[in-house]
Image 1: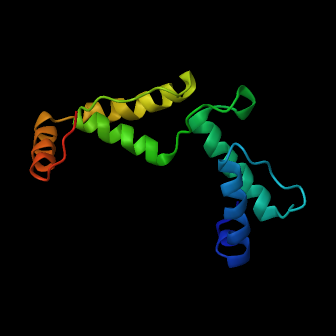
Image 2: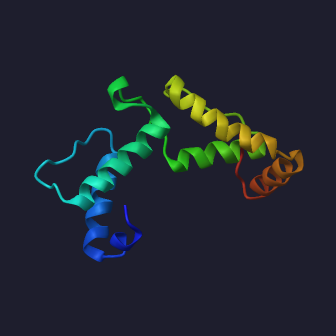
Image 3: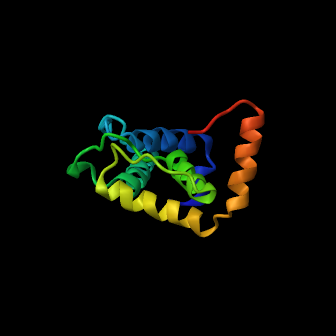
Length: 127
């Protein structure tokens, strides 16, 4: 995709509509909307989905990995928190493990203690 095209408002709108459809494994591309922008967006969205969750042809997992989920695993690794992995496929667990491991490599026990103290002061209990 050319960068100049994405700067055109109409192209950008169609691109991101296609992208959001591509990210959702339960939606299929509407063949009536065959604009170049929509197709490019759908293909980019589907590639991003499959990069995190595996091929749709292999089945849709119980839980979907998003950038937010990846950030949560990275933070859990940074803080040394345990993680909940039920509902993720083995493909997804491999992706998540890399993010968690990246966090644990930067783990500093004092950060966790400071966070727990702040949360406790505010009446938030982590079990």
